[in-house]
Image (cartoon, rainbow, N blue to C red; front, side):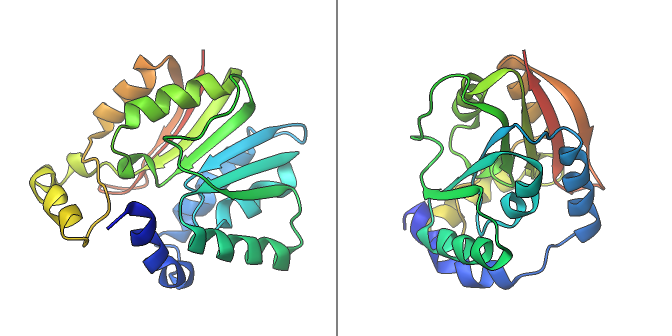
Length: 205
């Protein structure tokens, strides 16, 4: 089963599912907004059903939001229309093959996505290139390796059976090393609790 079909199948239930930790989500939104300006152009990859992009839209000039699930994007477009949000462009694309000129964006968001990539280092390097000098990469990442290292053995089997998506069982140390090796400096790092996703704001250059 392709990754797009896996997420297409889950789109409706994903859209209906409440945010697991609303307080942490609101904190991440607030911290991110502290860096946003009305003249900024953003990219969000793995945007899902568009909730985060829609909430950030009033604070920036434009958001280009991509996802490889057309079912997710259909929900996102409907949500944006219902909210009267017109400065977010939703398009079907996979970050691994997505191309934009170097220095295209002020901020790039990768929320709940880096652990779902087959090669996060290649994507992080691409994000660095697409950012303007001094631009920001904001991410929230589940680091299963911190608490469930044995999951490294289970994840490939689950993916082969179509029961799990692609999973990178990384640790927080692995993630920070990947970011700094690509040229980022860590400006903000926060984890709301053990086993929770790690939220990072990293600056290019």
